[in-house]
Image (tube, rainbow, N blue to C red; front, side):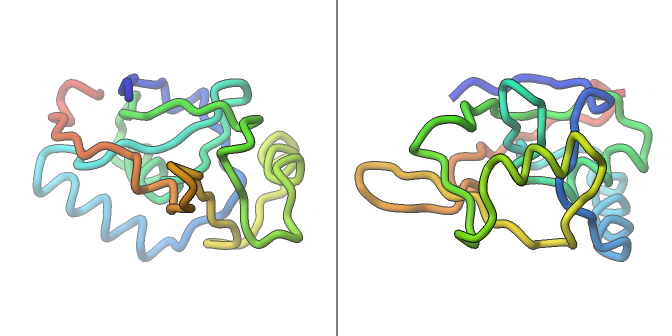
Length: 133
């Protein structure tokens, strides 16, 4: 899977974040000096599917770009749970700025007939934050 460096200003969030978690993650990224894991983003809308806290931590420390995998959210292989939330609801929440509470949705992917959390396909990276400013 290809990892792209996306401009953080183009990304849209559909969920709010936990401020303490963002602060802790920001501190860890600054201490380590690198980003450890890519996020997952819809290729059409640039809505963040997984990695909201990583995006906000990157914003907080002044990064301009973040490593991401880009997925076709319209694919039947990408599933959002709980099942009472539809993909259209996720996109609308991001576009209208009416975000869900933190950790409301879980994005899953069907691989070889099994469902896995989307983080399973987000590659580990070790990108120096100096290259992301």
